[in-house]
Image: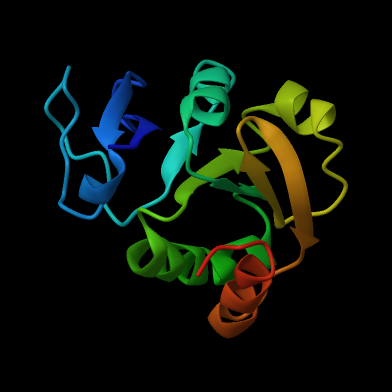
Length: 145
């Protein structure tokens, strides 16, 4: 039986789950909160290593700022994608104003910017607010359906 590591969005504990049980609403073994909520989790310097390096499912990060109009208009699209595509993908949001060093390390030059990570490595990047259909098409080009 294959297993998949998934980081809890609440306590950042890595949970090892049978791969065929990811869609059965699993809870964290430590804090007992749901591992998948259909909502994007907040990413910060404090949890970025655990989220990116300990999830064996892809992680899609929305880099945004509170003053950004396109970011605000894209937020519902990102949340809808989280509802539809978890647990195939872990969705996370990075407030670039609150996490300037991380945004600098990732060389964020425009927002919103989406970065797709697999096993801690950046595999793709998409700039700009896109409709849900286009986001799903982009993800499917990277093996997420």
